[in-house]
Amino acid sequence: YHLLAALLGALLLSACSSTEITSSWSEETSARRPFKDFLVIGISESETIRRSFESSFVTSLRKAGVNAQSSAPELPGEQAAEKGAILKAVERVGSDAVLITHLVGEEEREVYTPPRTYAPPTYYSGYYPYYSRVYNYVHEPGYYTRYQVVQLETNLYDVSTEELVWSGRSESIASSSELKVIQDVIDAVIGELKKAGFVP
Image (cartoon, rainbow, N blue to C red; front, side):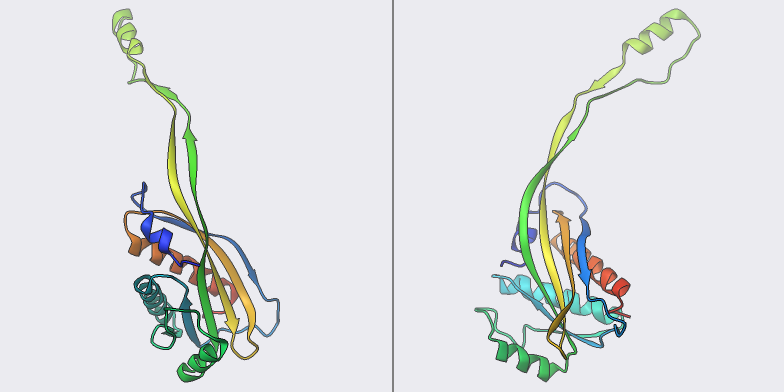
């Protein structure tokens, strides 16, 4: 998987980004509690993108009151890490939760805006002023707008059981600012983790 590679490379039409969580699942348990320390893992073929994503996620988690560490100093990005290496990284940083984000897919979408007709304000002081104004109705033809959507999946695991406790998929519209897109994804995920009770 190429974490955010398309997200950062397909910055197309929109002047601002739009991100939403399209689906999520959380473990049903009465013992649910906020985690205190996250290990953040991004999966990407680009080490630069991975480090940027993990660093931004760590910063946002800390602002939310949770200690967090990037996996970049602990896990090499050139190849997939073995389970033992991840376990050692978790032990070294003292994490009680592991968060992993990766790219699910990307697609180009198209939305149609129908034609519309509008006119300037009309005055009734005489037939010719009325005629000349309504004659100048402006017709705007319909048109299609294409935009790029990137879908990411984020999973949260409890270190004590190694079990999945929360999973969510997000969709982001390409933006002129890759940093804003990344931050929008992070904010959306953290918002859902708060609702689920895994972040204070």
